[in-house]
Image 1 (spheres, rainbow, N blue to C red):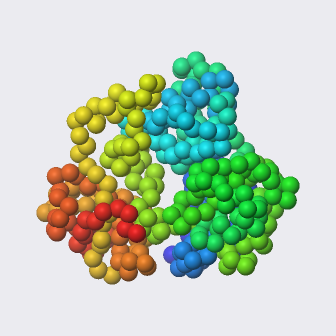
Image 2: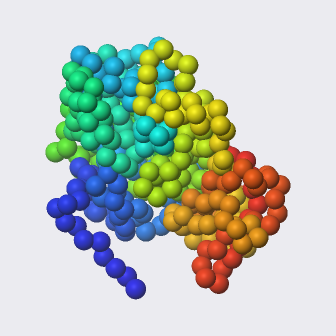
Image 3: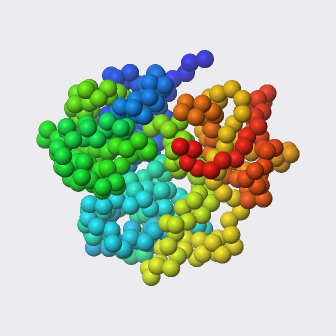
Amino acid sequence: MPFEIHVGPNIRKSPYFDATVADGVRSFSVYNHMYIPGNFGDPEAEYRRLLHAVAMWDVGAQRQVEVTGPDAERLVRYLTTRGLSGTRAGQGRYVPLCNHDGVLVNDPVLLKFSETRYWLSIADSDIALWADAIARERGLDVRVFESDASPMAIQGPKARDLARDLFGDWALELKYFWFRETALDGIPLVLARSGWSKQGGFELYLLDATRGTELWEAVKRAGRPYDIGPGAPNDQERLESGLISYGAEARYQNFPANPFELGLGSMVHLDRADDFVGRSALRRIRDEGIRRRRVGLFIDGDPVAPNGHPLDLTLAGEVVGVVCEVAHSPRLARSIGIALLGNQVADDETELSIRLAPTDERRVTITSLPFI
């Protein structure tokens, strides 16, 4: 039975909301207390466009937690497990954030504007509240707030051509995760070489929320020669590419995980000179060894419908892991999933299964990540 999502004042709209409605959005999810498009009515076309042309996504719900002030660098260093020495202005870093128990609470991209100004481009959680509380408890001279910055993503192999047409050749010289403040037809923004896909692309951080529709239409016009079209962050492609999705594979509220379990151990710098949140817990976890690991799964049988709800992974009736998300992969012509699996289970185990529905139990086999 069809149902509706209520558009109320407790959930915010992005600056691109009206433009996505005009372009035929068919579903929304809620992310960082904001509506984010789910699909535009043809998921297969959106997937093909991402792989072969260019897709434009309203990811305004990917909020920017701004940290400014004399102690800004001290705070961001303390928040993340990753050492930041050598990070330059205009450079971004993928930075795991953990609580004092070593549990991942977000995995943002940190954008450094200067020693006194940073953004944390966050996944779905209330990091601004957490970071502000830590700053105040430590007596740091900083201001922590949500900036008026709303990203739009252009992703796919032709995103480079589109970025060149919009901004000039200098856009192609940006290294991955680097960014630059600029403008498009007088619209102030930050252009970053980044995005939540392995197909390559850019994010345009709009700095004036009143001009969202204007920016959306300008990008759409410029992208017509490249078969541009609207879409949403694509779960099929992200599973194929093995990208981590905070909230799907780790969320503090339902099945917490630490960076070592998620394969992020190289970004836990326990030997750095400065302290950070969760350091002692993460040292203990490293020394004791993790009890589960992140793996890929091949799922037998007919193509599965996309499912982002946790599923038990069982062996001989015993739960041995959690399947975080499943989908059908057109490129592999197989159904796939990502799981956190107990280390007592060998990689060549052949008797694992998941139950997709009361009468739909499937055999699964373990594989390495990424799938592609």
